[in-house]
Image 1: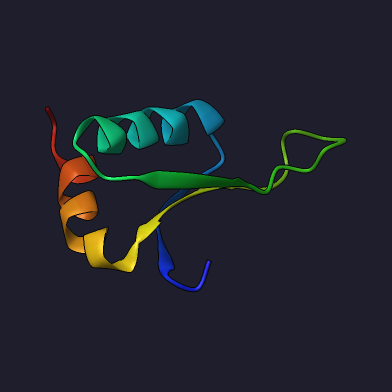
Image 2 (image 1 turned 120 degrees about the vertical axis):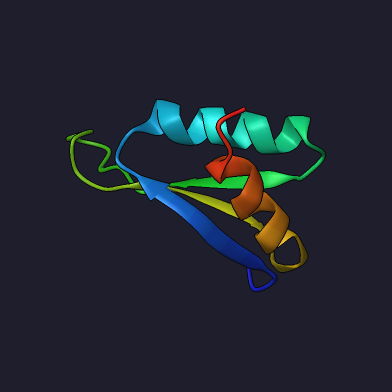
Length: 66
């Protein structure tokens, strides 16, 4: 994932999935890396990544209240 950059991190998987969908609906491919512990789903974060070239636009999209 050298050409990817993390733009959001949360312990709420649903939140990251919604942001991923918002980005993809805007034409920006996104990837999720789930770091939740497999035994205890309360530990760890879920991270959202995009291509480095899309970083600024992606941050703008996820910060908007649309």
